[in-house]
Length: 536
Ligand code: G3H
Figure 1 (cartoon, rainbow, N blue to C red):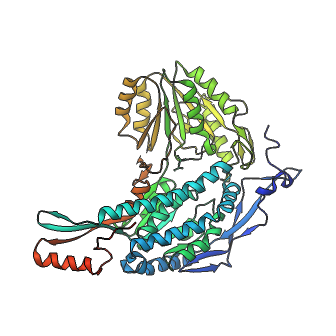
Figure 2 (figure 1 turned 90 degrees about the horizontal axis):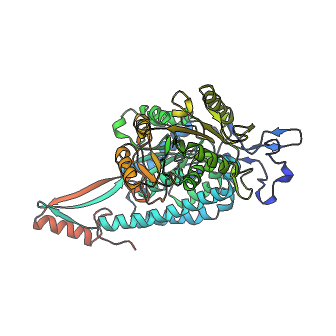
Figure 3 (figure 1 turned 45 degrees about the vertical axis):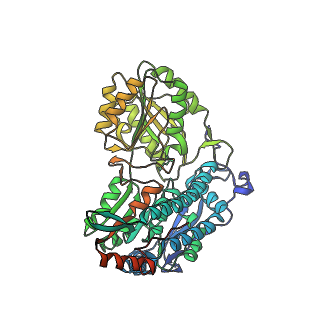
């Protein structure tokens, strides 16, 4: 069934053809778009082309493989622009910083079609989800501006406690290194990058491993909309660039979405870890718990979307399903039928849900997980489950899964759905408690008492419990975090502004002389920090 999954060039609608090879040699340091003439990294699309004789590797572009030298130049530029907190950017008035970000947003929106197309070709995300990623990011930036104004309004006041008058304001931390993941290379990166910038930090941004080419159309926008050195964009392998940056000790905030092992390794390279703030989104193994009285139709529909949206490549995906043994047969039948209805194909095709995978070797890795599960007694219960063709892996539903299998504890980050039958809820609670991860979970059921008690048992294990719905990050105004190895810090539109800043107090004893000084500073606008103005 997968033989003809990949199109020939002629079969790709003109609108979605990529056109020429994207040779992307530019990178941004200190307000200058530089051209790289050294080694390049080939960008291979997960969308393989069928040339009539079989699949052809689809090389769609290349990006610079910068070295330690350029990474350090980018850092120097960010350090210089921050200037120990006295640079133009960190001391700029909030209204002016907002104007820079708003100007960037206007420019960014002009590149929607191009960015969406590149997301489809680079990471295989389907058209509606690629569009959603772009639009959600624009809304996030708009909301960030609204939240910053509100934060500033709340801070534009004086408090008087125990005879100490104080104004408390949020100020930047320094130089931020922002690195995003390949599954949300635009959205998740920008949900750290934009808050970091708007709070007055200067930034070195290194795009994700895959999902890199889409940055190119935005490079000029970044360069035109921010003062020099405020945002520096580098490309290359992490081991050649990130280590060197950390070892300098000059990175103040490390914003990273990836594995906890990767994050720990990078953090350890900082000579003074206590000076480094981590804003981390890491691994997860979110379970769905299907109680005996669950509305099976709803549980199936939510669990299918939860486990297989973007082929299961979401940190918030449901990565293991615990179903009560009394309803397992019914649930499995309906689940498998729903999976069978998911349309497979190329990202731009109407209604397509399952698409090729961008990580090289991913299909082989998933096959290994499936084989391992089979060895320990699970079966693939859906037709064509686990079938592969090159970068395409047809979703495999495994049942009954047990703790001997790798899939029981390993984050698959792909279209393999393990279903575990359980007798007593204690087995499930124990799984959650023993897990190294603690991002979210979903409970499906009807009985308020059972659900209520389960909430109490699990609320101190994860960051979010979803009732009768799949796990998800949104709405972006809600806190997004995790416990254990799943995250460090909390993100939401408002929380991100806090994550990339620190409160500073300007305080004085309440006496006539001090009040007069403070009043004059405010009245005559002698300070950007100590002020009472209102940003509309
Ligand atoms: O990959 C992790 C994302 O933050 C998930 O976001 O739940 O909106 O897909 P989402």
